[in-house]
Amino acid sequence: MKKMLGRLAIVGLLTGVCFLDAQRDGAGIAHAGEATASERRDGRFQGSYGWDAAGSLVGLGNFVANGVIVFHRNGTLTATESGSLDGTYFTDTFTGTWTLDEDGTGTFTTVDSAGGISIFDWVLTANGQRGTAVSRDTGDVSLLRMERQ
Image 1 (cartoon, rainbow, N blue to C red):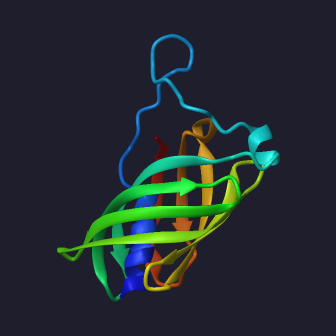
Image 2 (cartoon, one colour; image 1 turned 45 degrees about the horizontal axis):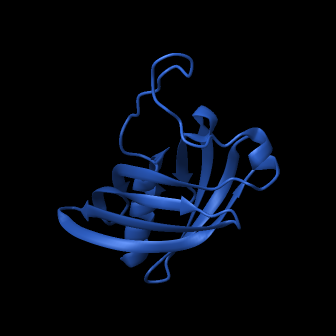
């Protein structure tokens, strides 16, 4: 069950809320440290993202979750989550690894506190300010959304 909660959480990591985007010239959102193509190419990408998700996991039920994921420059990640699986509250922590290509697409793998492993394909958008990911795990129907903090 911990593995499924992990999948659920990371699914939430990138899925929950719709974020507003403002134009970069003039009034709008001040974007913190955007991930440029050169940063992705040179391996300098890093950042902290808030995330959330909602969906269902085959055999487990419906869920909502949110948390923070930190992509470290050395290709590792750490994450936290809290959520509800069919009305039962849970929390968890994750570690993992990530890759990111110059075009902003990549893969990340998470390992939850019980040792459950999940794999996601992800893409950064809005110059690295937002991202989405989909679970590659059989039986999971998960879309995650995240925004840089």
